[in-house]
Image 1: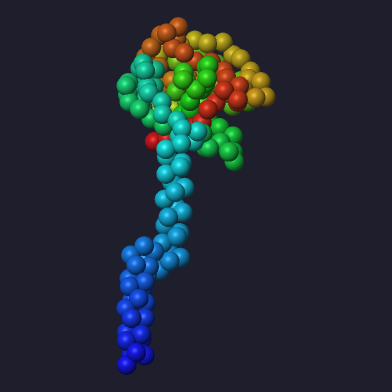
Image 2: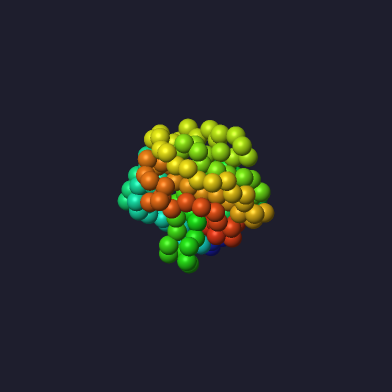
Length: 180
């Protein structure tokens, strides 16, 4: 009789432990641990200001691609495995991480750039820029970029060239690529 009572208690304890394990870990512990790991990594990436940095659009130099007063995020890991490319919209650091410009890269290191009748001319050829919707009359002389320099400009070319922040920046000033 004592043996049956002991076996009944053991069965209840085992059933209770099994139920508790299922509640905490699930029926497939490996899958649950994988989900927890993925969620932890995503949480760290999203909440960490060292990977995704918020940037607010102030001004109309990137209009109509990016509207004023909107918040976007800069992916600081975007150029971990490759260099910035023509057409990328990037954040360019001026001083610290508090003040950045959001601009589009139009010329790469070693290239020659000029503007004639509002068109960007790279190495003597007109650059196809479907994101530019407004015409302008910018005239900027030819300049050749150094081995570590990129030329950036906003998408809103209807502004006078003198009112538009544009120019060259060294690679170490590019914080990352704008998401979306």
